[in-house]
Amino acid sequence: MSKIIQSIRGMNDLLPTQTPLWRHVETTLRTVLETYGYQEIRTPLLEATELFSRSIGEVTDIVEKEMFSFTDRNGDSLTLRPEGTACCVRAGIEHSLFYNQVQRLWYMGPMFRHERPQQGRYRQFHQIGAEAYGLSGSDIDAEIIAMTARCWRQLGLSDLQLQINSLGSIAARAAYRSQLVSYLSDHPNQLDEDSQRRLHTNPLRILDSKNPNMQELVTNAPQLLDYLDGESQAHFANLKQLLEQLGISYQINPRLVRGLDYYNRTVFEWVTPHLGGQGTICAGGRYDTLVEQIGGKPTPAIGFAIGIERLTLLLAPTEHHLDNSAPHAYLILVGEAAISQGFRLAEGLRDTLPQLRLLTHCGGGKFKNQFKQADKSGARLAIVIGEEEIIQQQVTIKHLREEKPQIRLPQTEVSGYLKTALGNFTGIN
RNA sequence: GUGGGCAUAGCUCAGGUGGUAGAGCUCCGGAUUGUGGUUCCGGUGGUCGUGGGUUCAAGUCCCACUGUUCACCCCA
Image (cartoon, rainbow, N blue to C red; front, side):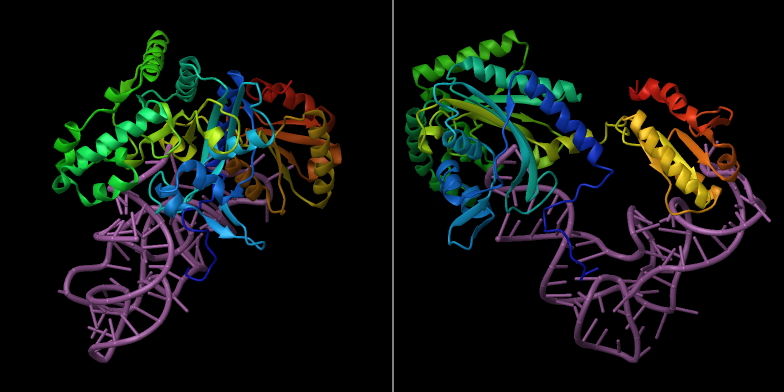
């Protein structure tokens, strides 16, 4: 056990038992995003390290200690992407996608962060996200949130809770930040060790402390919402009104700040109570200054990302209808002559019924053994060719999932039989 | 990065105070020489995570390491 090569810590294999659920989640979400007119973008997994340090923020945990970074043969510092937004922005600027136009984009793929793995948190994890560029109004904020709400409905998730907040303009946020730091600095004895550190890195985060001894200090702290500039207040009010008109219930969480530096105005999270400390399934917000910060023209933007692992953890206990990768039919071949005749038949069936999932037995063996494997494959039908069938150019067909008499057919009629027998539940026509 | 739990067959797990390595499921064979899924019988499969220590004797006790898991920090 100790000497075999294992996968890298925190990077998981997805085995055939899990991939149907993943594909279900991926296609469901992708379909929702595309019905809103979002278009797919694919960017490299590897980017210049500077892209992330400049966008996410130099002093965030992600940049300080969680990035998979290395120096390549040219001496350049490269990083496996820890998130998707910076990559989209880089690609958009590089290809002039934001020049006088609105872009609605989505992406999906692995992200990398060097954290200690635990439930719902891995070093290679997968996100599906969307970004909208060139729109500054609260209407696009509402669209983004409504789109995520639709994702949950499509997946059958009903107990996710939406939390929203507004961070205000960059200037208002900075003003609030200095007020908060000075308030907290006046009570140094009440700050726990984590919070003393965060006072210099991410003071807004202190408001979200889970330490019960900090609660009094936190509740008496100045409120971010009191420092909002007028425009941000109006923006937030419009968003809330739109959400109400759409029937999307939300909770205002004044302590919701998000960890990445680039957010302003609207931020939101969808949370579940079922995943312990990793309850955030989806998070996002507005980042109106990031494009300019990375070197593009000023471009308002908003986006979000969904953690696919966390979603599959929530869905795993409830998904029972995903066994759609089982073969429709299993071809049992006994004897050398059956193998050659059977393979020709199988290829012919694949020509005439392109949707047919047909598993051909390989490796020989007795009828008993092959029937056993046919059953285990989950196939509805066994198609049998043995010595008797060879002579008469026939096959025997046995239903493995229902009580029906076994029948003999000429090989030329198999395709027609399968078409009607399986048509109902496979969509073959 | 900090702290706790766990590590025995392919899987799920038993193995009081040290004394010959176990069960269920899976898999293979047979009962049934052309029929799976039910039943019965038999069988394969282990350097007990790795290394060291204590002891006549270690799966069991001690130490270190590795892996894993949960929580914190942080985040999707």
